[in-house]
Image 1: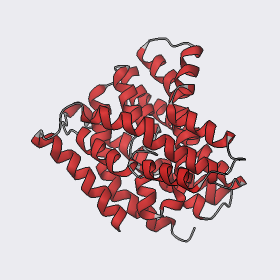
Image 2 (image 1 turned 90 degrees about the vertical axis):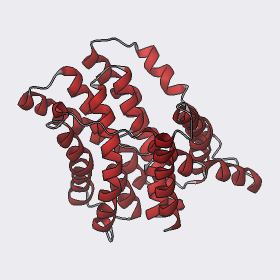
Image 3 (image 1 turned 180 degrees about the vertical axis):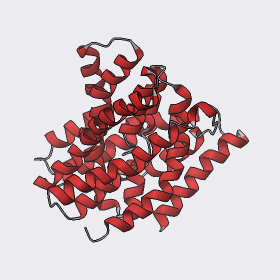
Length: 301
């Protein structure tokens, strides 16, 4: 309960700080830079170094890839039914197909399942959501914006991303025991992720609904918050007969609101900026309501 209260408090603090102009406009950029370069790499290194590997860990790594491929098929069908533009379709695939498995997902896992399961979230995020965004996501953004990107650029973005570098180092140094003081330092840095991430998310939320978005926004949010986790539930639990806390946390991650970084990419490629903003601005707060429901439905799985 303490973790959940902290999450809500920091989220509201960020939102109020923007409204009252107590923090400068550059605040999200600075906070995000700190998280990406220090908080998330510390967590990634620590949990990848310490976590025992089992076949169950394939499930969290595969989940974002499954969700994104489902989004591509689903929104291509929706494009024909609603006569959507290429840019709007690309936006929906990106923002509806990728969840906020780190900035919101990791604090939510800590609040609902405990810090010992954050490693599952990192597996969903690093080999999952981030790699999907950096590869398939960039390709989708490029194709739907009529731009171009080279394989070299894609690879460079992946290998220069600090959390991904931390994942590689964590795996490489697994055979070397770490002293307690270094683990304490990494844990302290990692602990900054929750408050800073939620302040950043709260600060960036903006609400500006238009008639043009009325037919698209509900479809995108229903897909992200309901269809994706339900589809993962069907595959993992009904078809594959998987069970356990790792599976619960993985499906819980699948139910996260839209990925902020995916929204930023959509806006950078000019893929329906207004829709991307509203998908994040409304989707993340609504996920605070739908996630407890998913947590309840997943209990005992």
